[in-house]
Each structure stands twice: as structure tokens, then as C-alpha cells.
Image 1 (cartoon, protein in one colour):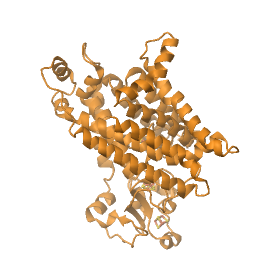
Image 2 (tube, protein in one colour):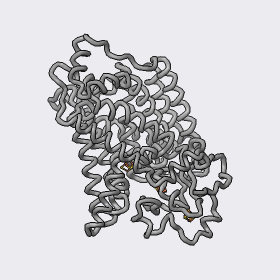
Image 3 (cartoon, protein in one colour):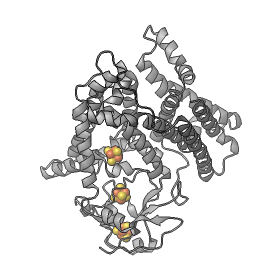
Image 4 (cartoon, protein in one colour):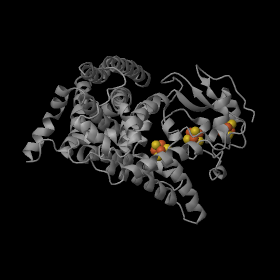
Amino acid sequence: MKVKTDTPKHNEFDLLRISLVRKMVLWAGFPYIFQILTLLVFLTLAIIGWGLFPPNGVDDKLFAKTCLTNLTIWGLWWPLMIWGAVLFGRIWCAVCPMELISNFSERFGRTIGIKQKPLSKWLSSGYLIVALYALIQLLVAGVHLHRIPAYTSIFLFTLLTTALFTGLFLKDRAFCRGFCPVGMLLNAYGRGSMLAVRHASDQTCASCRSRDCVLPANRKKLVGRSCPSLLNPAKLNSASDCLVCGQCIKSCTPFNMKLFFRPLFHPADYREPLASWPLTIFIMLVSGFVTYELCTEWEQAKQFFLWMPQRLSLFLDLNTNNGWIQGFWTLFLFPFLLWLFFGAIVKVFERSCSFTTIWRRLALPLVIVISAGHMVKGIAKFVSWVGFLPYAVRDPSGFKTSHQFTSGMVQIPEPIIGHLVVLITGIAVLLISVYFANREFKRTQCELPAYWLLPLYISGTMFLFVVYNW
Ligand code: SF4
Ligand code: SF4
Ligand code: SF4
């Protein structure tokens, strides 16, 4: 298949110029074959973890590292997905098994005559996604979802089953657009993506008669579908919702759709000055979660962060380490107080501006720093967990290995990268993120005075201070 390769606009490189990439993206099996592989991995991990609880005398954190299910999902896949989202947008979505399941159940539902409904406005707004994300984080804090393989297994099966039923009864990638618990995270973190599906020439689109990239008749195809996410590829100007599935690249017969590689936070992308409410709420929640995650690597910071929930637990006559109270503090109370503080700082100078407007204006620049904090925690976790992989491959349940580690028969693996390297990388990532957040704020809110940037510098300094003391 010959592909027209226009000179890209701006400082972008069209990856489709590379023969191997072009052949892969235009191949009928893309992305299905990769999705089938990730589905097999997910199913295998879910089966391994089914019914597994830490054995007596073994710490659940150690057990999570030795069991292949939890090690792969929470110690390897999750940090890689955070890095992938920030650098390459929704790259994970291109190979995601849940999309595959909902795609095929949607086809099956249609074939057997189920009258599939479009996603309601409320569901597509993202409120449910934010609620599901919060629920997962509460389960992490409350029942140690990330440390108990049996719970992780139920979590994986629940995701796959929900994707299946959503596809059966709702149409147009409904699971991705209204139910996927990581959808909002990918949307928020991936906005500066270096990977972008975009049209190359305005004239080609203007004179295009077939408009295959949006043609409803193409939606049911298996290969070369019109955008299954109901986006308009010819007008795409943001990485927030594009799943990089490549279907529009295949469907566009004038070969005007490209896969660009470009610098982070490309100037040609659209930026919202005011984040939507679900997005703002998500960013507020995740700010608390990431702050706690960074604090866990420095004992004093962790104790400081947990002081309030421990007092709350005592007050309620509960165990001082009650996970639900800690989760409630981390996800709701602490972020609320933090953002109240951010809002108050701006309000000192700008009394007429409401807290809600301040939050919505600050959300998108701030999420750049927050996602960087998440990346830093991700790298610390990844390097200290990945050394357990050979043991988990040999003993997937982790029973034997966890006993050997606990009894001291086998030495616990050291992180694969030294502490200093992680520290320097973390500080560099955070400093770069403050630079980008600052630049993004100026691009979107150029009319606002400099004191609006104070919350951004405060959050950056707070994260840097914690990471510096790791
Ligand atoms: S939105 Fe969620 S379910 Fe859909 S492809 Fe992305 S990660 Fe998978
Ligand atoms: S992207 Fe391709 S199919 Fe869509 S309008 Fe432009 S030229 Fe036509
Ligand atoms: S715009 Fe193209 S690559 Fe993005 S989701 Fe739609 S079809 Fe897939």
C-alpha cells in the first residue's frame, strides 16, 4: 500500500515514514494481535491470583512482590502505564484488552439483535469514571487490593466482565468513554503526548468526499473503521481522547492521517483554559493520592501525612492504621484542604474570583506536576519491584518464595538502579514538569497575573522537598 507522506507541519515527524511502523499500523491485524496478547496475559494473571491470600507470617507487601499477578499489575504495568501516558498519551489504549472485549461484545450484541443504546450524556461526561477511580483507590487503602492477589484477580475479572456487558448493551466504545476507571487518568496525564494522530493537510480534508474517517457505515467494519470513539479525526487537535488505535489512519483513503512524533506539549494542540468539572475533581483526588505515594518513601513525611487520619481513627475508636480512614483522608479530605489553600492564595489577590473558577483554571497546569510526581513514585517502585520478577516467574503464586524471603533463606533483591540515580531522575522530572506547567499556564491563561502561578510552585516545591529527602 502506497502512503502519501506530506511534509509535516511544525516540528513533527511522521512515524508512518518508517516502513516498519507504516506496515504495522496499516496491517489488518493491528492492534488486534497485540490486544489478544495482552488479554492472554491479563487472563493468565487473573487465574494465577484467583483465591490467593498471603500465607501466615508473610507480610502482604512482600507477598505482593513475590506473586506474579500483583508484581506484574501493580509493580510493573502500573508504573509503566503512568510513564507511557505522560510521554506517549493513550498508547496503552492501543493494546488494551478491555477495548478488545468490548469491541467484540458490541459486534456480537449487534449480531444477535440487541438494541444497543448510545452512551448517555452523563456517563460520557466522566463522573462515573472518577467515582470508579476513587473506589479503586479506596479499596487499595481499605482492603489492600494491590497487595492481595485474590482481590487483584477479582478486580481484573470485573474489568473484563464489565467491558463485555457494556459492549453488549451500549454502542460506540462505551466502556472506554464512560466506564474505564483509568480513562480520566489517561485523559489528564496524556495531554502533552509526544505521539499524536493528526491529519496532515487541511486542503485534502476539505476536498475529501468520502469522509471515511467519520462515515457511520464504516463504524461496523473490523479494519479501517471510522473513529470508534466518535471523534472527528480530520479535526483532531488534542491527545486527551484519542486511543491511538490507528483505525482512522487505515480508513482515510487519501492517506491524510498521520502518526506524528513531536516535542512534549506541542503548541499546535488545543488547550482548555477551564477544565471540566469531572476532570477537575479527578485532578484534585489524584493530588492527594500522589502526595501520599511520594511521602511513603520517606518515613517522617509518611508519619506527618498520616498524623491526621491516625487522630481521626483514634477519635472514632478504630485501629490507628485504619485503611478506610487513611483512604478517605488521602483521596478527599487532604486534597480538599490542599486545594482550599491553593484557592485561598489566589483569592488573597483576586477576591472576585470564586474558588471553583480558580480550581478549574489551575487543574490542567497542576496535573503536569502531579503526573510528574506519579512518574517519580513509579520509577522508585518499578526499580525496587522488578528484581523480584525472576523469582515470580519460577514460582508464580509466590508462596515458596515469600517464605524463603521471610525466613532469610534467600536474600531480598536489591533495587536494580541505585538510590542516587532514582533521586536525581526524580528531581529532574519534577523540575522539568514545573517548567512545562508554568509554560502551559502562560499559554492558556496569558491574561492572568503571575500570582496565579503560586500554587503551581508550591506543589512543585512540596514534591521536590519530599523526593529530595528520600
Ligand atoms: S480507555 Fe480504558 S478500556 Fe479503553 S482502551 Fe483505554 S485503558 Fe482500555
Ligand atoms: S482524514 Fe481522511 S477521510 Fe477524513 S476527511 Fe480527511 S482526508 Fe477525508
Ligand atoms: S482518532 Fe483515529 S486513532 Fe484516535 S481513536 Fe479515533 S480512530 Fe482511533
